[in-house]
Image (cartoon, rainbow, N blue to C red; front, side, top):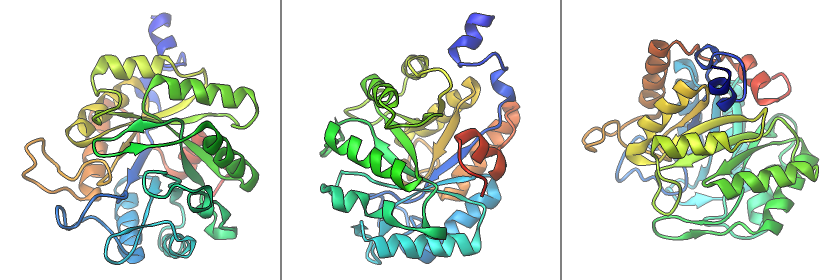
Length: 293
């Protein structure tokens, strides 16, 4: 039995751990033309955060959109989003994107890390390598990854380490040894996207067993893989990421457009059935190694 617990990095029963629900609200490519519930404007995003927070989510992955839905890296737009969320839902843990799928330069990708005071995000995504998505590559050179990580460290923003395959975990361990990343290392493990790690249970177990001891991890699945991957993560003692960035539908047949709130409430129901208590904001901050809100 101890060997089984070692897989999860703890002697604690996995089902006893508090569960953090992270919501990827909108992303760069999810479209209102497919699902009208995708939030674009700062008000829409802030309202969605509060609905999901009330449903049980504590952590939110934020992209900015122009009013017409175009992705944006404008610092002013991120500031408006965070300001509205802080006013309406001050306990929420906010993470911002530094994705390179659309915006390629360091200046564009790092602009969100320069916000200060109450507008400073708690976390920021840091993709730990390059990969192919279904229609385009995502290029993340070692130099870019290290530069973003150093700026996060300098500005007091916790990296949310995105790993799409095992080599990205190895890169994070290397950067931790160099002192560029501070513990606890917090990973988002992604599955089920064409060109990246499949969403089979064996793939999830392999990724989790490759994590360094003491890591905090959550799992996300693309499209129809979202619910199965979330369920496996809940059983294994990890955390989950849900949201319309990754999955626009509530059902695998794609007949019921989802809302972010619907996806959060489903995870809460599953977690309650499996005996995983939902983390409160202060508990989630402690788990993630964040300062008290």
